[in-house]
Image 1 (cartoon, rainbow, N blue to C red):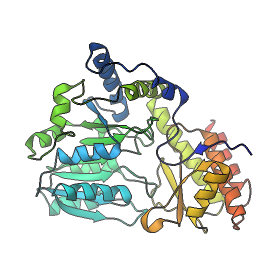
Image 2: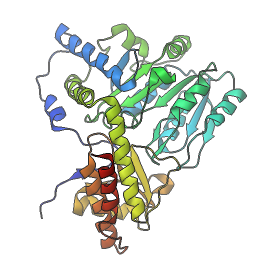
Image 3: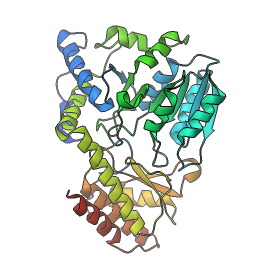
Length: 377
C-alpha cells in the first residue's frame, strides 16, 4: 500500500515547499555586492528570532557549532563555569566546557527535571569568579523547558554571562533576549526555523562581547572576532543557497507574527499532551515545553518507533541513554499544524494496539481535537 511519510521528530523537522524551492535559485558568488546585500538584509531580519537589537551571526554548522562558538569565545583553560545538565544537551555543554579546559561546577538534574533559579544563585555565590553559566532552554532529550527568563534575572547581578542553547527552543518557546537579559543565544535552524540542516546562528549582548574581548582563548573557524570584523559578510564561505532558504522562512515567520508562532507551538503541545494523557500514558517531564513531548510507554519504544516509521510512515524519536526503549518523543515543532498532531496520535493508538497493548482507538485524537476546537484553530 502507498505510504505517505510524516516527520514528527524534534529535528530535523519538516521543511515548507517554498523554503525548499528557494534553495534551487542560482548560486551566486559570495564576495559580491549582490550577495552581501542579501546577507545583510537576512541577518537584520533574523534579529526578530532572537528578539534582539544586537548583531546576529550566521555559521555554516549544526546547532552544536553555535554552542561550541559560545564556549571557545568565552572560556579559556582554568576559567570557572556553571553548567546545567538535565539531559543529553546539557551534557553537551559539559563536554564542550571540558574540551576547552574549564573548571566546571555542574548542576546535575534528574532527566525530566528542570533547574530552579535559586540553584543558579547558590552556585554563583559559591563561585563569584564564574565567567559563564551554560543553560539549555529546551532539553530535547526530555521535553523539558528551563525558566530562562528567571535564570537571567539571577545571573545579571553577577560577573558571569548567561549562555543559552536555544537550538530546539527557537520559535517554539518565547524568547526575548534583550528584554530578559540573556547574554548569548546559540541556535540551529533545522528545527523551529524550518530549514534543512546546515546553518546555525548566534547573538551576543554587550556584556557577552566584553567577556569575549577579555577571554584569552584559542580558536579560528568559530572565532567571533572574525565574524564581527567582516559583518555582514562572512569570514568564510557562507551557505549561499541556504541563506535564500532562510529568507523564505523568515518571511513566513514575519507574516504569521512571532507571538502567533509561539502561541501555535503552545497549542500543538497542549493538544499532544491532552491526547497522550487521554490514552493513559504518562509524561517524563516535570515542566514540559512546546518543542517535544516525552512519553513513557509499556512497550519497547525502539520497536514502537520502528513500526510507526516503517509501516505507518510516522517518524517519532525514541529515548536516549538510560531512557532508550522506555520513552518516545513526539515533536510539535516548526512546520507543523493540528493535523500533524492528529496523525501522530492515530499512529500511536494503532501501533500500540498492533503490538499487543490495545489503546482505546480515537480517544487520544478526540482529546486533541477538543483542544483545537476550544482554541478556534
